[in-house]
Image (cartoon, rainbow, N blue to C red; front, top):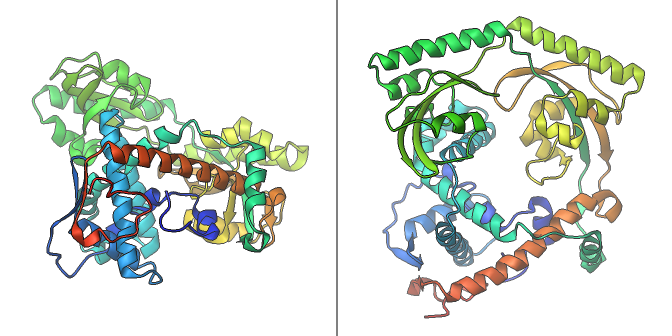
Length: 464
């Protein structure tokens, strides 16, 4: 979606995202000191938008830029929020939902991003003035709405693709004096080896959970024990609870146990690969949807197990270094990173979906990685070293610098991935624009008099 004029190519080039994906990104760290006299400024379907919600967005965005006129900025943000509400309304009609686990994972991701921006989690807490749990609690509904709207948008555009001819046509449509300048970029590969979990560690985890299971059977509160002992970050703080969980939201082993339980019944201890051991209590069931409480205990790797992972990866390093085994093939065979198996070990930039990183992107993604790569030559690999994986556990990894490009103007040879992503987003944007026009007509929409002079891209005032 775009607004009164086409967004600059530079902006599109850097983000590959629609305005919806930007919505709410920075809101969580802005605390207004001036209370807003609240009122409804717009209604989309049965969903209202208040002045305070709009002002929160304005405060969040205005901390990042002062280049846009305040009136124009508020109009633009209001249209973004109306777009989101339109998607939410359709998502509910089409039963497009997100799970509690997905929401919790997104909240965790945002906490990490903001903590990194402030330097530490404690500094983030001090700035925000509330605990991490209070922060999550305040943001949970907003994040759920955002994710649900994004999922609806993805459903609308899921079948849209671009061909090489489309990419070339898009590139050729850009005036040569408007081609963006691409900063230095790198492509990085990694092979990760996680410590093997010993049978003894599995037995200890199972026995720990069996003790908890027996305590529940003797009458102790399941939710209290979940809050104390469960190692599932998505539910432990909520007493192990997941509400309205659809079949297929978790691994098959979970479904096989939970969907066979009767309300109030507690499962025996069972294995839930790759996470560990689990017990579950069914609180309610509605067809293919359940309310469940569970406790997860993960086997712990020892220092000796970690050392074994290092030894295994050292052998892989020597094979690559001395026997000329291509890094891509070695990654596909030996890495414990599932994404890496598909990409030949190349790390995917979460900001772009491509395998190239600008230095600033790399610093946000993994500062230690940026420091290491700075000292490497193209084609070089590092000896195995300890790292922390996405799930917070220690492992060993080998790094590989596949390429490093000099700053240059965009071209098809060096920047095809980026151009492909941009042309795809442009095609999706046009499809979304058509969808919005169609659904505005069949949806009740009201905009307050204060904002009727806004120059919206779409005719939200069609019935007014």
